[in-house]
Every structure is written in structure tokens, then in C-alpha cells.
Length: 124
Image 1 (cartoon, one colour):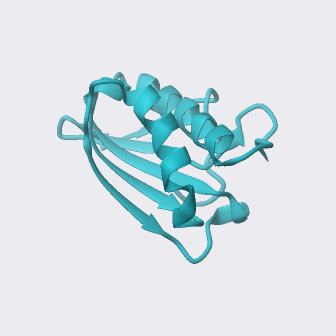
Image 2 (cartoon, one colour):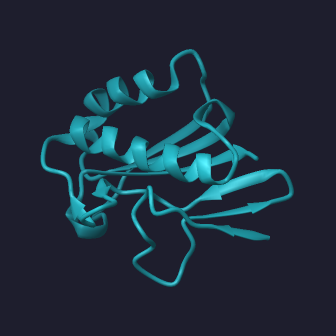
Image 3 (cartoon, one colour):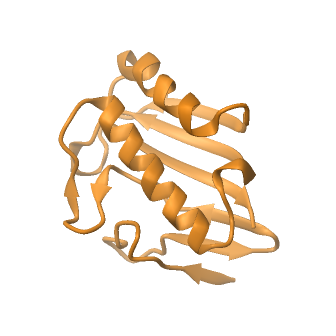
């Protein structure tokens, strides 16, 4: 197993890796809308937060030698399922015609009270 680390995405804020690469797959830890340079939550609504999350995901995937078009599964955690449509619009822009498997759930509470957290599994 290879731990993936890049300063182009938020540093892990606990005892975990940004991602683990193993057996041809990359498993990303959940990303929240932290700005890597400041480690602060991005201002704005769920669409702004989702876009920041995807920029973080893209950076970790690239550090692992992967990309968004190699994502096979996502899990989206929303603070409020009423944000689904707004989140989904941004999600669709990042994936384009690529359609990975997905689960979306409402969580009772997310880290730092963000609106969205997303984790992915991708081909290495």
C-alpha cells in the first residue's frame, strides 16, 4: 500500500492519509471544502462547497496518478438532502459524461459543519 500526500489538497487533520493506492485502485478519504493554502472552509453555498471539494479530489487523484474520469464509485454526504439538486449540478459538471456508481446520504453532522463531503474510489 502507498499513502498519497499532496499539498495541493488539504492536509489530513487526523491519523489518516489523503488516499491509499493499492492493487490498481486509489481510495480517497472524504474531502470537505477546505482551501489547501489556509485550511479554512470556503465561503458560500453548497454549490461553492461542492466545487471546492472536487478541486481537492482532483488534486489527490492527480497525486496518485489517477483522474476524475477513472473514478468508479463516489459516496456523497450531505448535511441536508434538500441540497441534493444544487450539489448534483456541480457534480455533473465535474464528471461530464462519465457516470461512476454513487451513493448519497444525509449525515446528522459533517466535520466542521460543512454542507458536503465526498469520498471516491478510482482506478490507479
